[in-house]
Length: 109
Length: 113
Image (tube, rainbow over all chains, first blue to last red; front, top):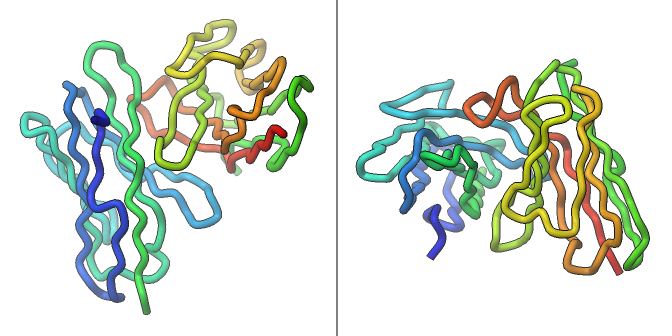
């Protein structure tokens, strides 16, 4: 079993829909990153959070450290949001990054 | 423009022929790291560097070498590439470490025949 599990693996939705991507982890962590990988391959950092919620534009990330779960939400989704979304946890103690395998999101116009 | 650059972007080579993938950042970042990305496995860390002359192994260091002689550069060296090193490689940097925003290079797609 992977230390970091993302669900769903693939998600297709209509433009305008509210999107939720989940990240669960089995190890103790200090914080978590959400990354976006564009269809061309480039990776961009979206959020880093260790508690509560962060918002940037139409993107919202939440984390519950005790429940070992984080979610990434996209409101009013748009085709340009189509990408792979990756969560990465900072392992408590060894300060290493462990990555999930990503959620491939496709938004249909 | 603040960026991380990698060269080459694409490379096809043969088993055993030494190669170097360069990585450079212009943001005066202390932390740099190399990852490989394989289908179904996600990103895995190869090596990282907390600062000049300070490097350490990640999760999958076998078959790779790195050096950090200057703050801006962090080359990845494959002394004797093998087909199992065929992968998509990313260099990343951040101000101080994994607690800061990570900036990724565009990736290098390597095929070893």
